[in-house]
Length: 83
Image 1 (cartoon, rainbow, N blue to C red):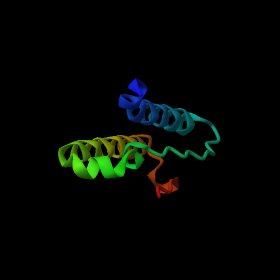
Image 2: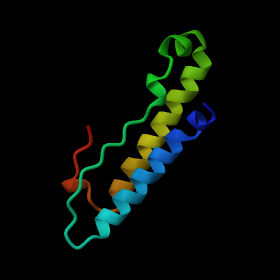
Image 3: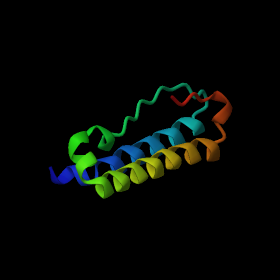
Image 4: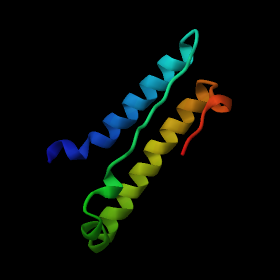
């Protein structure tokens, strides 16, 4: 349960590292699935604890922005699909 507090950052950092490596490859061809998990954890509890839910969603926004910024910085936007 303690790891739960840092897993989002680890997923995001792994995605950012992977995007950077693939962008530098001579023939980049890759698939990355990097689903964040905090929004799926105890939804009822998050609804009851409104402020906690708000912080978790802000963290998810931050992590997604970090990945999108990495895609842009790696200059692979035109060859990338984000769903």
